[in-house]
Image (spheres, rainbow, N blue to C red):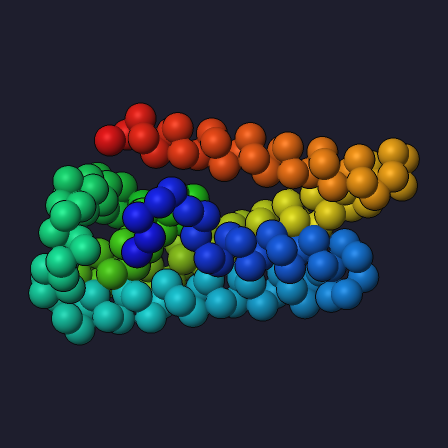
Length: 173
């Protein structure tokens, strides 16, 4: 786990892959399919880990320090059931924890899988297309104002996003 606020690796890979697809280096359709299948398979593996290890999975040191977040995630499962699996897909900590918690809570795999697939399809396609459209927008700006100006504008946008995430992360502490 990283100590600084960081973008989860799956999102980064999907967005960067989308940018490459906008440049014609990858097929956006195949990329979206691979990202979606990887998201679904990864959460299914997390479910079976939680199911087989049970509550012991919650006693790892990294999670003990985040006990309040784990408890909130467990409350979310108790309240929303499998719908929590779908909505957790869009929050970094919950996305990482929800599959194992669903397994620990003995949610039926059929119900888990349905909402895992629904969330995985939406998440995978959305982040792939986000990168694709961001890459296409960058190319339009670059062709209109030139490569250096477009790179400077992209650097300003990325710096602003990083600063916003750092401030948001510090505010939570």
